[in-house]
Image (cartoon, rainbow, N blue to C red; front, side, top):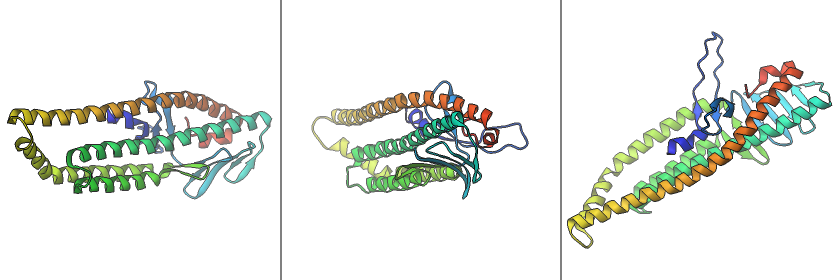
Length: 270
């Protein structure tokens, strides 16, 4: 369940290519759609998107910039455009800004969902003040810092650091996997104590107490699943709409390349 939800913010490894001059690409899947190709943004560079200005960089070097009025700059040099091309560039800028905003938001929501699931599970099992819960809270803070380094909003600009996605994915996998494994190992003693307490405290027979304990754990799992399912459905509804917009934006990018061939090198939606 959680995996299908978090696919909205999954960083995918470089795509296989038969070409000997393969250029690694990074992607963010907007929604878990049957037509996956039409729902992917390819982030090979850093995107700084706002409705005032869209800037795409490679490291510190600016590749292209589109201003609010449709002016286009490639490698710092202004490119002459006519009225129709200017309108297309404005549409493209606004569309990419909306997509970047969605990516920032969905990654933040994926983090929030992960944090909620971890915190809810361990808090229900051990209580709010347990040391394991405090470690989960610290882990959530670490994850928030990691996410904010690659996709974030600053004033009216949405930033997606495509150049950092591979390193971010490696760090996230290491941080989350290692810490969760350590937390589970460290919590085994508390889990055994919790089961033992359920066996020998409370009212009723041993069988009744164990049944009550099992029902409590089952109810916790059902409540968490219901919450996560509703959360995920809401995200997928928004994602489907953004996927439709993204396909239209891909077509617009293709039209821009036909009119301005020098722009072909910097396509983001191939």
